[in-house]
Length: 314
Image (cartoon, rainbow, N blue to C red; front, side, top):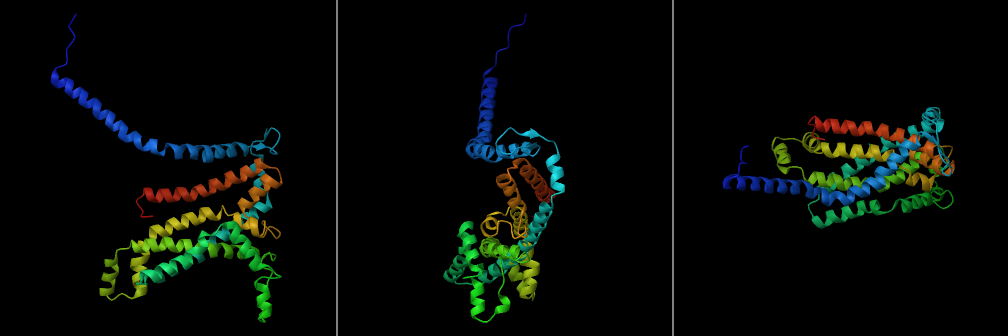
């Protein structure tokens, strides 16, 4: 029987060095996870857990009190024939179209004007004034604009006093105006936030590019189109993605100002989910709508990830 081979001093030192290096690599990889672990656990229990429960509830018929009954795809079949869901989807798409155009254009335009101000104090004053509505809570914004639209002591009384009777409208009671009236209130709060994001992006734009364009004789419009806009493309895509996601989650101002009325004219998918779960005691059906909406939004997120994977600067 051969005698065991003893490690020489060089081999022993090399083995110890390798062990120490492995432990150091493990600590370097594990340290970030220890820091993120509390937030990860909160996310799993607060977001992940309810998401899994919602998915399973979408296949059940449950009134919120007794034990649920497994019904397979019945909730999803009901969803396809629900006229309110179709109306809510159209309203959500309309809301998305509004917020992909008006607040983004307004925020970008004002950001360009403010960034051209050289006086730092004046620029900060304008930033504060325009951003201030974004700091107000949704409840306050909803109540404030509900008072503004009130037919007895709101803006309609001013129009009547000024003789502008053609502008007197039932802003929240007219099915043709209710959704746009609520969207206007949300836009009042939202565009200032986008302005701050665009200002940050504009300050990160290389000024030498504008100087080179000016030397080449480019006008301000050409400089904006060929220099500023391409540099803002990642910001625009990011804001567009968030706008699409948030537009399908809108419920706060709808709940406060119209409750989805009149006649479902301002009903959104999130509002209909809430009504089904709370008012109609159908959390199973509400979960089916929520799951379907989540899957639809996942396509937009997947497209964004795909473009990033392909190397697009978005």
